[in-house]
Length: 233
Image (cartoon, rainbow, N blue to C red; front, side, top):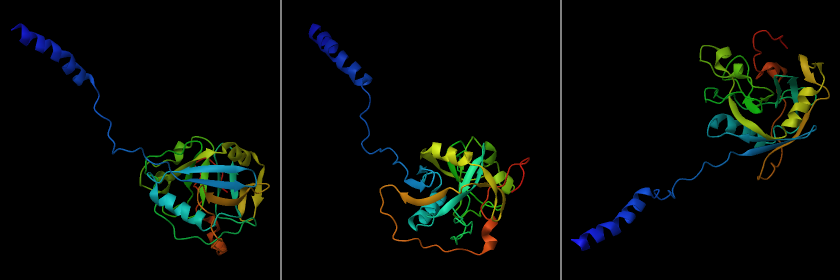
């Protein structure tokens, strides 16, 4: 009997330790890979964008296609509204639109919000009209978030990335004086901030830009609808 009790006492610490020990870490689970980053080298300074392919795969693939083609090289930020957003990605220095690929389906219902520093697909009244243009939110623009599929106003704008570096450059663009110029009645920053190059960090630069100018009728495409109460332009 004493030998049995002694054996039980010796086993208790081992049993308690086995229950308290955490299960071994899984070796198969890996953290999600960080999204690709794009460096916008502009006439005002550099802006680094981190993209969210897990949340907006179509929007990210579309944006990267234009980057790989050198499409954004020489385009401008043609719209800047302090306390709202800055927008670019389609127009040349003389405010002529470039030819784009077909529009993509909106991913505005991906759960991402138009917070300060996020990057979203610009579009026209049709939610599925986004092409090359994008905008950067200067403040938390939750009114631009997806609220339902009833109309273009409730559909919102698809966030597909965020500024990972150079938000001060974005703020400098927003602080530039604006005026009417070319096809736009207002909000064109002066002087025009130019995207000198757009490159995926870690990838080789494209050999050449493949895009050409488009007909003038494309000038109104892919501009975010202004919330009620703001003047048009």
